[in-house]
Image (cartoon, rainbow, N blue to C red; front, side, top):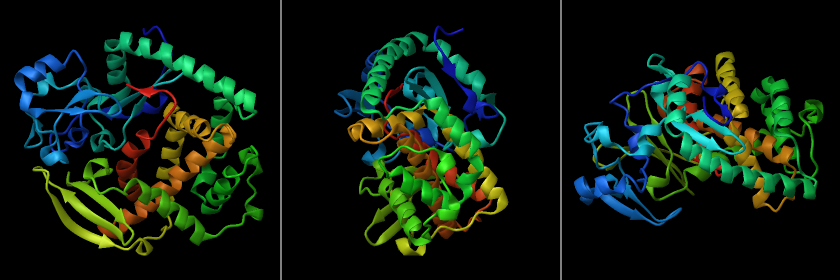
Length: 372
């Protein structure tokens, strides 16, 4: 048993496996730990690059500087037995805050297919193997959270995280209602703290066009990059690597191939993509995902980061409810965009594909604490 608290509730019912047709994790440029560097200097010296952000480190190079890891050949790692620690951790994210929260990256398509090792079992193995490193990071992160809470209390913006989660649990079905999301975002922008009980749809000043604009802005901001390395990747049912690059003119859909080349597939003006209505099955898949987000420490950590970034002017409750509302409308717009390009319905399958596209982006959001 680990010597610290571990939260793994969001892993329940999921599995961990690998499919050699996928290679999604090989698009994430892995940092080499200091103890790994000598092996790769000796056997793969021409495959190394020096990086300066977020700190100086060695990493494996990407094909043509934008594709998959150079060690990936025919969707198989050519030195799999010696792959870096960062590769071995995928698709798990270890968020270290006041406790360790193990979170599963649902952009991993194989996680949805069942079979393989139960995710909780594999996560427990990884925790045990990395116990010393986790414990060391926990000592640092807990002091950061103590300082954050003290700052919040001094500014009068503190709320107990578990109480905020309980509010979301109690109002979970409201998160499929666009009127509720719109009202929630308006309240979240206010300086005064509020509870979800105060969201009155009878008084909601609902404007679908404004909400679509907000959803479009949230989604397109993550696709606004001329560098493919910075773009979210959607691994399609055919295992293709799909990129969507936004510009003032609209969204261009491209395929990243195994050699690191980009191939044009389609284009849509931003106005062509509006929020499409969900089927009842699509709503249930959305709410299942919202429930997972609500239990992730990284989501709470992202809200804490925003409070700190804006100088403790916003209440933690506003930031937290706002983070979840923005996540939902971002996801709904991405689902609508995938429907436009790929013909998906807004049903359970369509929401599943949108989550596969979105979740890696969500886990990459800045947070107080650390991913290790």
